[in-house]
Image 1 (cartoon, rainbow, N blue to C red):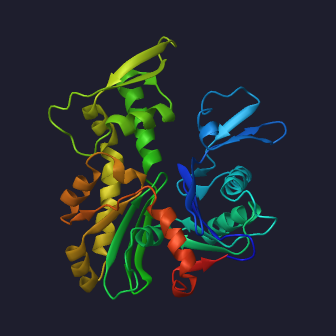
Image 2 (image 1 turned 135 degrees about the vertical axis):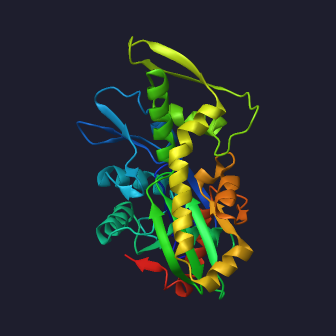
Image 3 (image 1 turned 60 degrees about the vertical axis):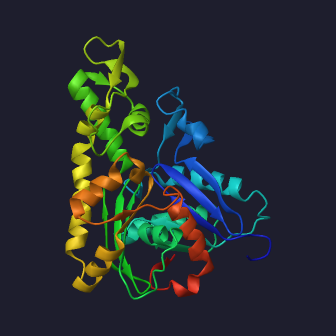
Length: 337
């Protein structure tokens, strides 16, 4: 802590943004959505309030997700959103600028990393360090990444599935696949459109996924979830009852991409570390890991045990907190902005 300001960790996700404040823990967990007034550019709402506006705004207001696939697609909106959320996390900064550890997916270009650093600085941060999301997830789950043994982390987020093999405090291999919770939602929207000629919103698809989505079909599962959309033939509102089997069919293709990315990463692991992973299993975290049967799917397709932390949604944010306390020991995996 410097003066009156505490350092912060930021899990800047495509679906949710979480902020960890030194000594206080995770104090902000809000949807990564911002609503702006078009003519003036003024921020109308951020987080949950803006999320409720998605698809419901008048012409002069735009509600948007400024991050897609782990990448900032709207710098101005991202900076505005982050500025507001950091103000909520630390309302009494007295103009001081905290150090910040911000998570990014593996494989970002220099330009994309610079955009993240500049957005954090525009939001009020001072010195900014970037850490790849699987590293933060491992730290947040309590793994000792400095020991001479392999750990494999799979973080299924909103925009990306980030996979890393860690050993001796460094990254042996890391890859980021542009498939995650958003891809699942888009697949459900596409399935309903093709099967029923009905257009539903991504928010509706997300709610259905959370309610009855499954990575493994369960025989005899008689649950259903009611969605409402617009009939593309008549143009009128229409109500549908989706089943878990239908959602599994919708999600099958993106789930195959997730499994293929994990298997591809395993094929590039040195033999000694592969033996460690066989013994320890895979740490599965992120919001996408909560999809019904996801741990079982990964285990069946890789032959490895799967471990999930107690709070998979918070692992990355908690990991930024641990990173703040050990910056000097993480020189090999931190990128100073």
